[in-house]
Length: 575
Image 1 (cartoon, rainbow, N blue to C red):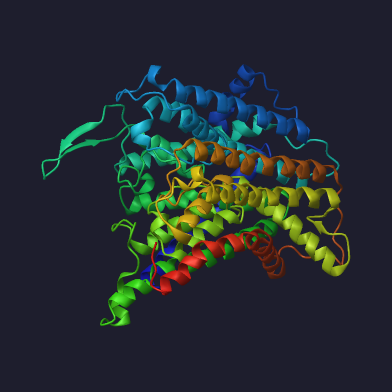
Image 2 (tube, helix red, strand yellow):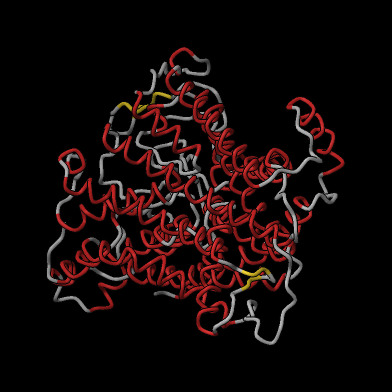
């Protein structure tokens, strides 16, 4: 690994870390109902929204009502987006006269954006009109992200409150997240992207003639506005098929660093929001430390793996010194303007979060390099994770970790002064087991059925890795892909759509049951036997539980895919 790579990793990590406290403090004030910097401007707008929608902001909801509101809202959003996709040919802002999206693809896409997955089995510029991109996809980029943050805040309230019957009001949390947090950040970021050369227009595509005389159609459109919330909301759905490797989505080093920061910024800051709202910021920093350790571990492995020459390449160049081979590394599938280090930083960050955007093609990574993004997703995307979903995911792992600690010392486990009883532990385990179920079962079916195998473009363990990655991405609500797999088929559109639904909502329901149960409990003062949850011991325990419980479940499947391919590569076999 080069000094340049280490510097890039350090700069990115520092940039994310330095914004944790100010952004986290702002969100803590926002969700505690305190006055914020934007209140004088936005509070009147907020009141108008409540009046129009018939929301009573002072009326809080039981966790069941809160969850039901979220589910009904998501169902309505799915139906609306599905209708837009199917009726696209009759809707405005369609200068290329693109037709209706087929039913199975429309189902997959609608589920994808409602669940904050943003998986795309299509090329955006050749399939979707400007109206669909803006009213359909960009709207869901805001509200699906806001939904995740609202749910995380509800769980935080469960830890912070005592003897309470409510966890907040979903409609208030959704409105405040969108109005005070996502919209202001997205507007500023969109203007910066526009300044740096990202298009924002409604004109038709431009016909051009290349130097060789070939005809080319250059797509454009309202890109900057979608790109901003795509990154901030850990959505990842690109305006263009090449996603953030496309120069219109990511023109230069400035936009690349800004977009990288925005992938993790809100998710990282929510850890400080958590600490602030439970009355002990050290608790938030401990959770952030766990995320940071796991992030850096994957980052260094991925960058190191991509910096190595393949065994096959070494065999073909036995006359060259190792240093000559080392200098290049694996540039296949990567933009020359970004290079290896920046590409692996993006690959690691986008799969630690449920973002799914890419500035390089993960399918072209070395087996170990591609293993890191896959494992990041399979852990439940709790290494920062999606906005909101990452925090509530890691807090469920924290409950399991404290249960393990309680077993070791022989006392009832507790976390943040809340006794963790059978209900909370069972619900946490139930949620954590959803990801393996939604990944391994459909991947196994796809690997042995004609419909599943028909989409493969690679044989052997790499082909299996493509299937495993696809369902990991769907169930983990990530959206990135090993792009060698053709998924725009009836089988994959339906199977992956169901995996997305399982991965999103079957996590949420038991998590909200935990939130409601915790809110009803009293806070027990710490004693001499209380396990400390702000120091290195807790950080190590929680990281270990995440790796063991969340990671080893997938080890047999990984052994058939990237690990087998790694050994095969050293034996001279490529797929």
